[in-house]
Image (cartoon, rainbow, N blue to C red):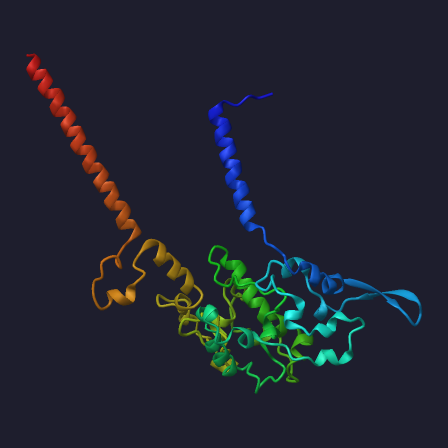
Length: 323
């Protein structure tokens, strides 16, 4: 058996305590899990079973994809602490469900978050305005809504994740590809002829690289203002098709895809308040991480030089005094 000294034992215990406290912070209290289980025991499974009173037999059915809810994804998504009946009528608690319940009105993002000061920074009202002015507007596509792109059961607010930008791009584009790359989904919203992406984007060199490294909305969305994700989708004829728009010194991507990343870097490394500096100098607004490090290094070297000089003088004086 390996024996640890008191010092290493203390370090080990402290490390364990930190890890344990961190793990505790990540634990969520799933207060509605019990009530949601009433729904998810069927809708959270690929297959569901029920007893048929007419035949007096247990029946096993495939859960239609549009009614399936991935339980793991739901409890890690943005609406994880909701009850199913917060959005759906309580009449669903009775099985078999009444066929008329399929006609129920489902609230959209603005219905819940609009006008709420706690969510004001997400600019839901601006998003709704852009959405209504896009090719996806209710006037153009009556059956199109927030949920056509964003599944409320799995939606997770991570579009601003810059640590894994490729994953963010993939999730953004998946919302578009769900319809534009699958005719069956497209038919839910329009009867227009289905356009194959490879054909409609044949002008684009190395298509796969663009799909993997750039969001569709960089070319097809009107990205202006503070919004990081475009909801004003432009007609195809107004989309960006000039390579120089992105592949140049003044790339559009710096104002869209890399905008948030640029802002975060400014917060960390300085010069974040650029709008203030355009007008005047404000103490603290020009703080720069690199200059701070350089200043500390210069200061430390200066102190070291002074101490070295003092020690050398003292040694020199002792030698002279000894003579």
